[in-house]
Image (cartoon, rainbow, N blue to C red; front, top):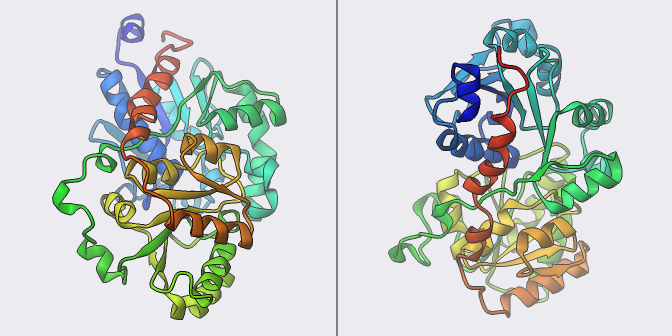
Length: 380
């Protein structure tokens, strides 16, 4: 690109490699897939990922990405965000970066002349601070506003997030880069239609089933979903259905585990974290995805499930409406609202598959981000 010509050497781009720690979260998948798409748009660029390590615990997009791993056992013990803020600059300084992408919003201290891009995924610390762990709430309250204000470019993951950022922090996003939907959610072989893969069968899944895809944390509102589902089962209205909770345990999940233990007799199962290659079949086989979060910055599972032709029930949150493109069944995030949404979903026709992949593309997201990274402030 022109930036390479101006520099007389390849463009050097660094990222917060802690976002790529396995298993990937929603933010991690966002960074991974956009990183992979950036490689095609910036074919001569050099990419660096900075993390505490170990390297084999990171999902680097390709061999083009060089991992810079913490060498001190003492520094490695820092919490992830603290390491990025207080330590990663020691490694960044040696690589003579032209641009740095803060895929998890917060920026380290960087040398002058490095273009900085901060991606904002949500405004949890303003909208639902009570659903965040104390250390995360403290870190975002202390650093978030200052970092997005000093970033040269700010990108939001949705129009809803951009609006809240403008309203609550007074920062205007330079671009909107929606999460994409992988081709695998569109191009499932016909022979696989309706078949439950062996990996899911081993975890106890059988049809018919509803699915919830979320990390177990208070903001995801899974406790009310369990109450709603068990109430429907006891009333005989979902006599044969399972409810599968798909996702890793997060903070504050102890009480949810106790509820799950009691709900197991009513057909509730937990699969734990599932690899990406299981997700298209999981959605295709489900009667509906239930996504009752109190707040989200976007809602990647919503777009993915609809792309598979699966009904979705979503909370009345603007960002989830944006992810659903008007196709979701919108409910209040209460036991009564979720119950009504589930009943409506199982009685509704399935949506046509594929449409969301035309709107939400990793390649398009990368096209929004690449020009901001490829316009370095200095030509050292």
